[in-house]
Image 1 (cartoon, rainbow, N blue to C red):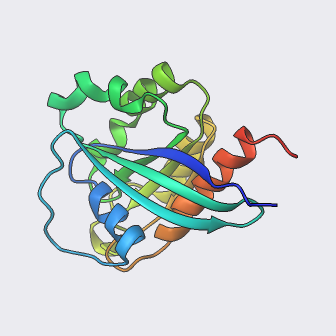
Image 2: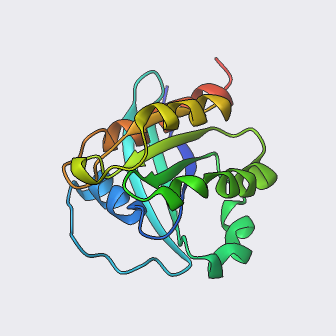
Length: 176
């Protein structure tokens, strides 16, 4: 019997400069660069991986530009998404305050598909402005899991993607 390959579409959501592109490249290539150009529109990437209890998964990752100028395109990019990583920068309060807008955009288009909240840039310990507790409460209120990550040193990056993919599969694949 041949094993099935699952295809999941994941979107990365969040304000400009929260580290979406850095997280994707850390996940796909296990590399970090100090300076990425801002994503204009959307950046499409793919990674094949093995997810426990499901097997082969092809993750299509849509890295959405965070600038307001791309707001009108969000619904288009979100179409067909199985879930999303919702990312904010632990050192910039505004990126946390804007999360509700991102959740609203996602829920309007994708309903109850899973979201995973990510507090990124935890390596910048002396600059952190959002308390972990505050982020945890926000995640609970919005019925999503929460993880702290650092694209720079790789903390929890792979786990974030794999946890989201596993949740998507658990919620969408009928138990055979």
